[in-house]
Amino acid sequence: MAGALDGQVAVVTGASRGIGRACALELARHGASVVINYTSNEEAANSAKQEIEALGAKALVVQADVSKAEDAQGLIKAAEDEFGKVDILVNNAGINRDRTVARMSPEEWDAVISTDLSSMFYCTNAAVGGMRERNFGRIINMASVIGQMGNVGQGNYAAAKAGMIAFTKTAARELARNNITVNAVCPGFIETDMVSALSDEIRANLIAQIPLGRFGTAEEVAATVRFLCTEGSFYTGAQMNLNGGQHM
Image (tube, rainbow, N blue to C red; front, top):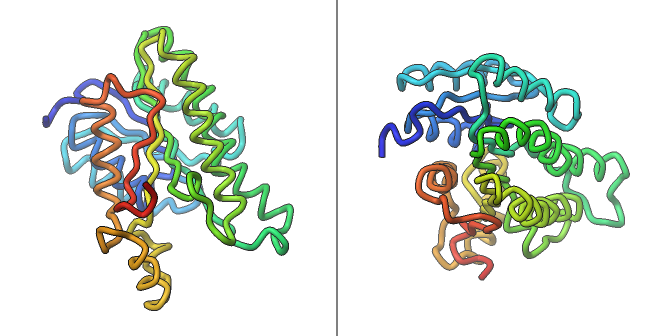
């Protein structure tokens, strides 16, 4: 399996930490050159670059706020200028601004929709031209179990992630003729900074809802992303459900 992505170029948005960083490292581990996108944490992004280069792969760090169309276009252009192409796009950038519908501000709604949902369109729109020309591409959209089942206090996040799933299905239909697969990965609760910050009581309540009795890991999500790039060529329009049985 090592070297299965030799010669391919991957762009991972929100790759300085958490799931995005794990995806960047996993793709590099299998031979891909990786473009590490970040918004504000330059130190973490450069640390990820060093880890990738230690694996013997090439990496490029690009600062871009992909919730803005012009930044997303600039990210893809930087990748193409450096490596000549983009084969893999992992739309992972995301934030949460949790509040009940009655209390949520328009700014909190807009921030999540722009960062989680619109960024996916902007980056995909910028990347598909080159993918179509080369008749190859792998697009993976990082959705969530919350987009499938909803959750109290996460109306903006649930709407954004459900929108990602719907977009995935449409893009998969449109791009299949160009040998471009488009899939959604829908993690449940994963051991990231956000989950680690929860109180012991909340963590215990969440784990009680998961039949496997634990949270997932960023590495497990990254392995699924890698699978879709290396062995999942007959998957498109799919929802990959990594939730420990929380939502069946």
